[in-house]
Length: 554
Image 1: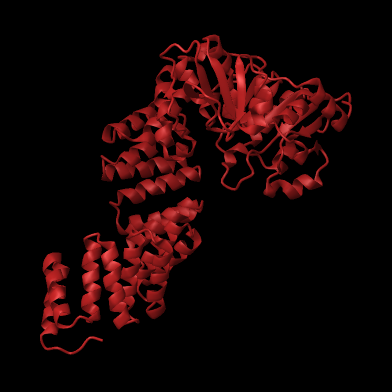
Image 2 (image 1 turned 120 degrees about the vertical axis):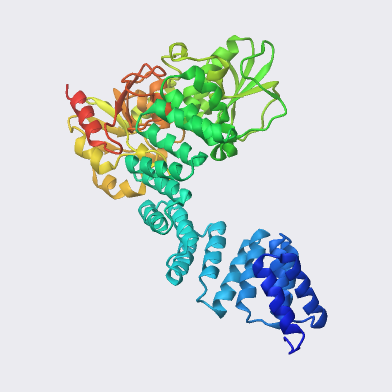
């Protein structure tokens, strides 16, 4: 316990005054002097621990504060600062527990609720983090950092409208808070409110002209408005401010490719490896990366998939070109594609992703091959038919789905990946699709899974046949597709598979399509068998489906 001492109190007051003035060295000396007189002085131990936190000596801070808590277990402020030190050490759950202990003693401290929210956010417990920030804000309604942090977490979990409200409260308190303006713009972008988002980014830049992230985000908004040249200019501004800005360079590449400027876009597309979301796909081989600048005759080269199944299908077309340069080609693709990819001319060996690799001399990711070959829109290597089913697979599925009737048989894909974080712009609600499909045709689902929010409606309908778990890999999907007269699909790997196999494929595209489909084109230079149907307004599928219906009924 802290013993009364006529010398200690003035020393403590002087040390605290020095601490508050920012003279940490003098404050530290004062606390040490107190501890020389009274080694178990809880407040001096705690405040000395605080100076250790300020000096980034977090381990020492925890030791000192623990000693204070041994003397005074109900010391709420010490528990809170202990949490900060543990958080800095990466001991997040211990930090959470420490903040909670502080709040169990005293729950009316906004700063502690805020600190708990930060630690919970780092653990990934986003809902609890939002709750903690909310309690901090109730206690301190103009707590700007709690508001901005709550908005950021709400944006992270997809509560974009709530995030905007938090950012609006921040801006009302602090109109010159550039990050609040920029983050507000990002949330508005996710809500599809592009013009208001642009205004938010403009405000952020007006407050801080050298704000690279705001220029980058403004480029994204302009891209979404199809103002591609202006988007590139904004990315360039972000890059001028921060030359090593992977997201800005990569998004500039995407915009250039969407605009058909392949010569400029492919080199910048290599920056994808520096973007955080692409890090899991980075392959670290001791062998050299090949990007087309050296002869490869007589060498073995590994070509490997890196992104989605559709990407692997689209860019495996380059494997025969690599083989034609005299190389032995090893192609690594996801397991579900191995059976089909063994058909590709010039491929000597196909390996499933994750299986042991044979020896090789060089490697190249599939999406770097357009750069290696200097591909332009006019020199895309067009292949009418990459894949075809064997008679065995075709006969198996002929028996399964039955003889075709006189009416046209159409394969249908209306949604992509069923995981919750999959972008909704690649899915159509089954109710909306069923409203527009003419009943004069026979429809067969080519997708393996049904989204949970489509399940009830799909189970009650009788228009579309579905084979679900019977689709073991893409050989099954292709065999069914080859038994169709045509395929109608949103932008998924099945669309790539069908178009790459020469099957007439109508691809339904969001207003902001993937770069590979470019803009304002009905035909794709990548897939002669594909016809493109585009949204006229973001998120509105009605006009697309009406156009499809009209074409079907011609």
